[in-house]
Image 1 (cartoon, chains in turn purple, orange):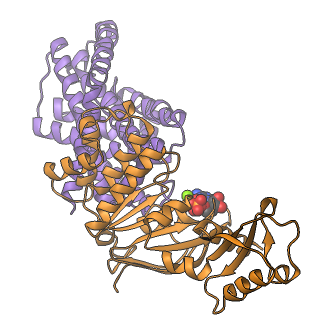
Image 2 (tube, each protein chain N blue to C red):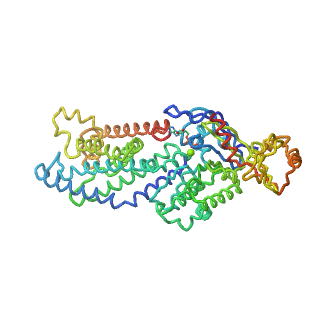
Length: 253
Length: 309
Ligand SMILES: Nc1ncnc2c1ncn2[C@@H]1O[C@H](COP(=O)(O)OP(=O)(O)O)[C@@H](O)[C@H]1O
Ligand SMILES: [Mg+2]
């Protein structure tokens, strides 16, 4: 293992993150607060509780997931797209590093940032609602697994993207709808039966369900299914990245 | 003689079908400065990119320090430093941080004393805390050299390091290269400037259309391929060239005040003795004699146009 390389990439990426830390933290905190005002206060006054949890608290895991998924994907995508764009990728490609080391460095840094933002949102949410956390360790574990697996997706996206439009498009067009339709703001059981089945094809459902379980001890799908889904997703991403470096797709001529 | 880089039958066909390398064989000795000369599009950058891992070869084999660049890429790449042709920099990063980054990336533990020495050698030490975007083009290129040296490579590839830099900077880059050579670093340098190859290189390789036309010691190449021109200044100008001299291929210089004779330095008989006798017989008086060696540039142009035809 080239530990010096992993450390170098990770610290370099974190330094880049911290140069713009205020932008990266302020905007999710503000938008989360807005969600609370709109969904929690406006809708919450009509729904009150979902499966025994106050609506304001019920939406917290979904809200955190929404931002954390977007952050993981975009951070990692930019992290690898940027050196490709300015040409400094030559250094990575000529370095004595393996795919695994590159991924740990870039994906690790992107996931760390997303995780930090997730925790900040959790803290912000705590100001608005009473938030019980039934399984804190699992809560963290779900966050870590989510940030890493979606940062891998973002990493693939960053290698695939040929321009900034494409880079922005996927999080906008894919991630956001998946999260909104993935039960962030409602319980799957509130949907008509047909939609309940269709929804099960949305991977984000498993994430949010598992994550919500770690807070309130109740889930739309079994926790084991959530874990399996994340593991499967992460595994697929890892294989894809390995194949990309193996073939040099969009990296080497 | 040990080769540190060994290239055998290397070919490259780009996806579009263009064959950029047509079976390159090249042994690079440890500690030498090898200059690759060739016109634009000859395949110099492609060759370097394959050795350094930026481009995948279509066929053939490359080893660096005895390590296969594909199978044993980690050991091979640790030995290599690369300064690519294009300027690629992290504009918003500080100079010293990018240099430290490269050292780590290549698997070496931090060594601030070494990095200070590299930056001082390249007169970048005063700029170490500046963002790269604030530097001039020449300074940016030095940053790229500093990065390439940060992990103490044994082989350094410089792809047109002095293209588009001013004379002063070129001189100081040559000085840096000489220092590295003294430390035993093997340097492979591509260039457009023949004078650069002439000044720096132990050996010269000429590439054209993806083929290595020759690799030879710089001095040897110049004696083998070089021609000399003998200019005879006459005491008094003449209007017509005597027939005996014209037959020898002598031409009359400007305003008839000199005779010009070109000969092959490698030939057994240069014909100079006979020529001088003929000059005397023709009743001409010599004021001065001068010989000039053809430059590497002349040789190069001859080779490349020869291979194109
Ligand atoms: N990525 C690429 N795809 C297709 N053709 C390429 C690519 N890179 C270089 N070439 C072609 O390969 C040939 C050799 O290019 P290059 O190695 O850059 O030459 P040099 O460095 O000697 O100027 C040129 O004809 C160039 O157009
Ligand atoms: Mg080139």
